[in-house]
Length: 128
Image 1 (cartoon, one colour):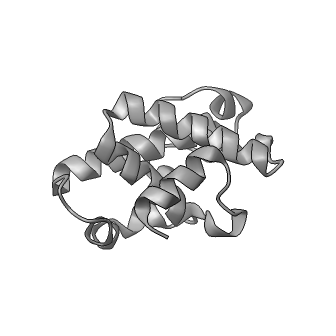
Image 2: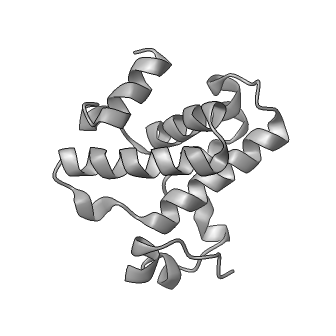
């Protein structure tokens, strides 16, 4: 699947669930950040992720703090490495972003903060 096809299927909710794991979340965010400002990419990504979850009957899986934190970390890493890198280069340079457990977010958040209902609903600033 090409990157444009992948992104379109993610955004319209038609991407099969078995083709959308943590690494694919990061890839989708990276693609959007190549096209948009961070604020616009965040809006598109969050809306698409909510649609995707709803299409799969898993609306409770959406987590605002995790979504925002990862997208902002991806954006920072893109700036540090150069935005003209291809996905494979970005992925190879950032293995910590591609691993779900242990999560890179553990550097920034306590388990209590990320596990809270508030963190699920709104973006929380890091508490570490």
